[in-house]
Length: 372
Image (tube, rainbow, N blue to C red; front, side, top):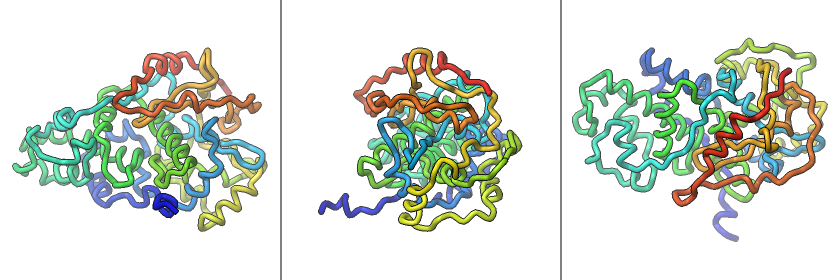
């Protein structure tokens, strides 16, 4: 038996204490910028990871349609649900999609105002450690430390600006697009930089694309979940907590993630992979909380004008998204459509791959909206 077959399934099982301390030490102006970009996603720092939930979900994932298929129903995380968790509700279609861009080690250092003379073996491999960023921007001492290669040593205004960029990059790299070795993809700094500069940008498609890709890779035998497992576990638990007549539209705002435990008060969920598998196999459509009561969108993305799907750009891939399959989750009437293999539209990104950004943006801006 191969080593990979013996390898245990794993997820981002612990948010490093440095990221907590960094966030708690941020100034008011920096916090405002981070919350504009990430919204309530920052509250994921305080969620306890549940590896058993994610591992149990993998067998139910259908990578040809990007949906979970259970006994008599389908579910899939939607853009509106992801946005709602972070309090980033609004006209999603009118927002600017973040797109992946190759970031060289020199470009990474330039964006963070770090001297190109800084030597670091990880950068040549397309990544860096959290400690690399934390010692420069996570602790106040980084402002005055002369041996860290900061171009603006002693300039607090410039340091604070780069500190915000570094934190968002670190958060995305640890929580949203994690690596098994716990290092951070340097390409994320380019996406974070655009997110800060463009107030009309959105991180929501990026997050959902990475979740879809991680599910597909694990369904094919991968042993590490490279997407936002913390958000996925909340999403699944909340759909399984069926409340008759529950209605609370739009009252949670940006505390939706932090308020999760309160909403789940009194609910007992399974413990362990086998127990979760048993529950998921036996769950039927009438036991599901279909539409989250806190979703307050009057319009939801339905499908593209000429296609049944839109395309979501992630850091590592392009993923098809077909919300017309799961409109019931968004409080709309739904008929599950004829099966169509969407996997042919997924694109794994690499330096040699040219992805159809123009087509992706066209599908996004021309997609139909479904009103309540």
